[in-house]
Image 1 (cartoon, one colour):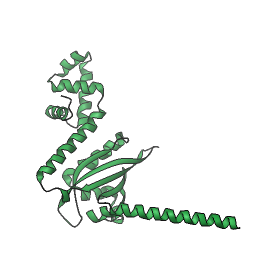
Image 2 (cartoon, one colour):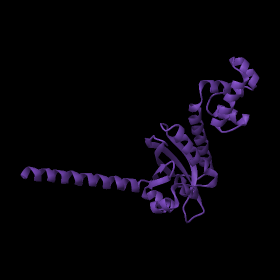
Image 3 (tube, one colour):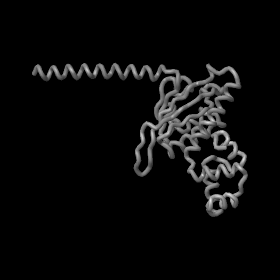
Image 4 (spheres, rainbow, N blue to C red):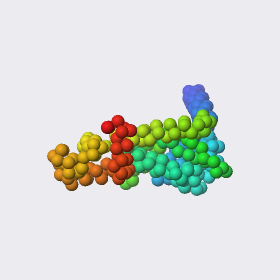
Length: 231
């Protein structure tokens, strides 16, 4: 009987310690000066910390009532919708890689948008008939630290380079070869002759390049190559 009581006391002690740790972690999550939230790619936001609620004016209950995806498009600037859209595409195709971006969001009671820098990482992946991903996101409000447009432009330029680096990692060796030749002004016929492949194969590679980089404009392909150090 004494032995059973001792075990119960020990379990109660461990439970108290666990509850204390959980309370401490909850406090940290809610006090950290960043919006922390979890998204599921088919639902949008499914959890957020108190900082996120205070910064944007939506409680978790509000978000769930609206639908997590509708909420994202409500707070994000229309010109920056490409950031959440690209992040979804990135995590679907490269769940092992983190993804970051710079974008604008606003509080529900304001028309003023603030600049944020965000980062995401897949924390759970399950595969069945349909792949389900949970992504941990951390967004930091840059406005308290940014006093000039020059700083914003510098961050946006760095963000673009980062996105280009992620894209570069998805290109095959052959695609990189063809991209370099395109930048040197070579036609599909000249590329085919130089690589000993058919013109049809070159055109297929060009289409894949354009799709991955997101442009059909040669000038944009050249700019991408310069910013990633290919040429």
